[in-house]
Length: 295
Image 1 (cartoon, helix red, strand yellow):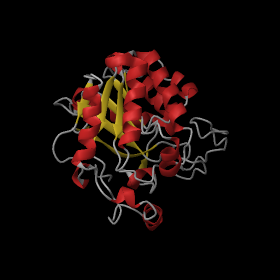
Image 2 (cartoon, helix red, strand yellow; image 1 turned 90 degrees about the vertical axis):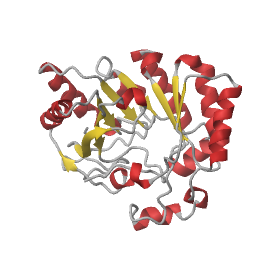
Image 3 (cartoon, helix red, strand yellow; image 1 turned 135 degrees about the vertical axis):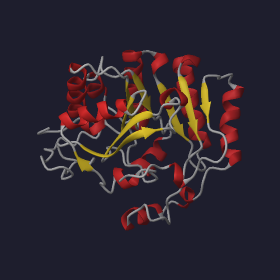
Image 4 (cartoon, one colour; image 1 turned 90 degrees about the horizontal axis):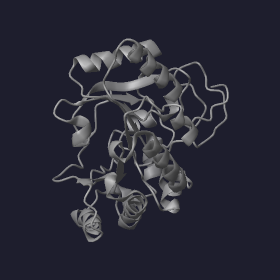
């Protein structure tokens, strides 16, 4: 990582050996940091099942959306350092707790270290599937290094609207990047092993339907879509730093939850297009209680 270009940001900087002392966009050094490793029951049914997914949340992020539900770790840097050997051991600990898979959450900026941890575990007979759970802002070159090690890809597809991508994630190239990344994921594991998420944002139904249309027109109904209504506004809560609150203050659209009408409009669009392979959320899911505790 003397010139890190793992993600589409292509910072091309030397990442410090000190954990959390990185100067690149992700803010992380060369040592793995995680903020949570535990059974997680609130993923898609195929991922969590009844046993729970063995979710490992990595500190830092290469996208850093201003509305991030996990801002405590993506921007505020909460987490602790683990070696590759220790991360490999955590996989076994989660398996012993009954996890049905290992769910690597926001792994992009630690891919080389995670790859070595997976290989160490497999050398010792580890046999649970690995899930790559990312923002969708991944480079094809980095994804190719994981071929044969990841069983299920669980990316977001956040934006088809480049202006929203610029405004909320400082990534106007997001649509093109996500298209290429998902194509590589499908190439590696097949349509049946890719689930693409989209989090509906307030006043962004048009962006959401454009995402759905692109995925359906490109991959058909064999690709599973997961359409989420759980956006939880954190503005005015103690989960954000003063800096983050100041940034969000400029976007009042993000200060409220998605309305029932907005979400129903998105689902109706899927029905009108005869899209059936869609996971939807029912009931009140936009709650802070659904956000994991990062301790």
